[in-house]
Image 1 (cartoon, rainbow, N blue to C red):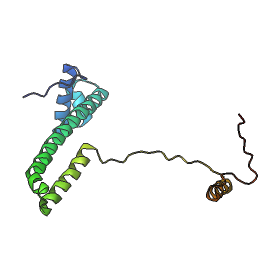
Image 2 (cartoon, rainbow, N blue to C red):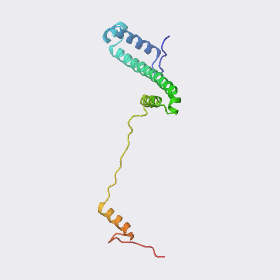
Image 3 (cartoon, rainbow, N blue to C red):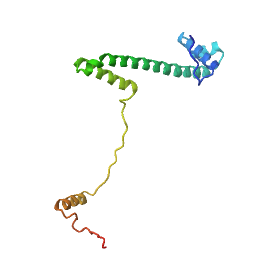
Image 4 (cartoon, helix red, strand yellow):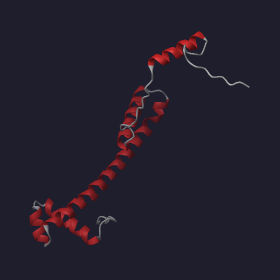
Length: 148
């Protein structure tokens, strides 16, 4: 069964890419492939690069789907024991869930930003002492009150 042609590539380009890739796999150099196909070396290089990108990505996605289905089946097979507190089933479910998280990219590092605020330590200590004394004011601080 022929492979479907990716939307990003025209049918003729895809045929050239498949042909060039097959010739490379047979042991020919890119230069030999270009001569045999009657095209430039640069064209062979572009077609092969595009072919690899399309097929490798597609195969990786297929494998990811198969692996995910297997993990889900493993979790389902151990779930009853997990719910009943079976130690082996619990360990299996945990390992499978960890693997699933890695496969799906859920446990990758998260970026975060830390913001700091510069404070005047002496002033903060005086405010804390004033709060502990019950006065609520810092010695020398001007307190304004509204007069009705």
